Length: 408
Image 1 (cartoon, rainbow, N blue to C red):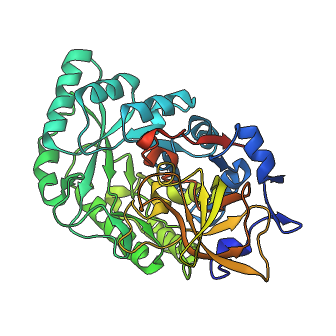
Image 2 (cartoon, rainbow, N blue to C red):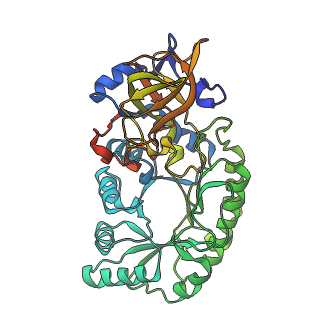
Image 3 (cartoon, rainbow, N blue to C red):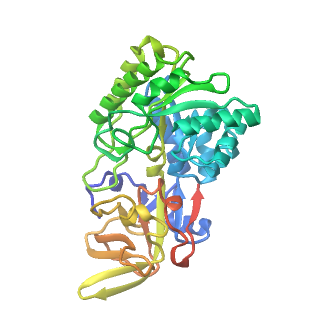
């Protein structure tokens, strides 16, 4: 077991066995109806939101980005704790509305929204983050057809980027948003009779563990929002500064400390420009809220040797957890933290390759991992699996059963 990863030192255990919500993995698998499955810890989700509330400025609003994990029960739980939900498709919009949250607290971002999605969003009364001039024209037509003024904010592609991000979403040419230099002319001609203007969405990157980079980006984001606010005649009701807060996945990475980030944001809010004096600031988080609350569980179905290498064959794999396999953005594959449910640590370990049932060498659960000895029937648990798991994986690939999901 790799002790360098912080999650391996914070796991709940009883008699060296992993416990999740006070239960054994075998018990939870039984509740879920079998493995493979995802298990999400409701208490961990609640605690994560509480941590944000405690450390971040009290006036900073918190939204959950459903794309990270759209499981309806999980979304409904978070909807009771956060200030808003952000969606990226019509299906996510329906999940958000099904959570019971006020439609006025839902926003919709996406670089190629369909006309049916725009109409649904307008009819539902949610805020649409406009990402192109043509999209704005389509919203005007939605007003003409439906008689409802669309609630709009503009997603802006700034001329800066969030450095050290796992995935950059802004700076340079991007499919996301409208280039900042194009915004003055759009704001000058905005038809406020056919739209209800709300603000700006400036989302620069995700999965960032560098506090200095995040603070620099927040300073630039507020400055840009202030410049844009001076160019629109309507009040700026909100500015969504995106998220970007990362979680550690790999050996050597540490949990992002929020203290300096929170202090920087408090200073920015306390000394905001006059053009943003009455503006609500929103942080939109996905992975940071749900990533560490999730566990992916699969079961050893065979154990075999191949020319000196021990293989643990399992009933899970990349079709359920594409990110863990290394095929969801990794350039050089690294292991997520992996444990044996029944034996978290042992002086006697063996180096194993953990693979799934798919007919491809890409189907890797864990590569060259030192773990306590495992046997057929044991449960393998992949940590940090609450975000971009089941819904971000090709679960229909090769026709194996899909993973169950359990919020408990």
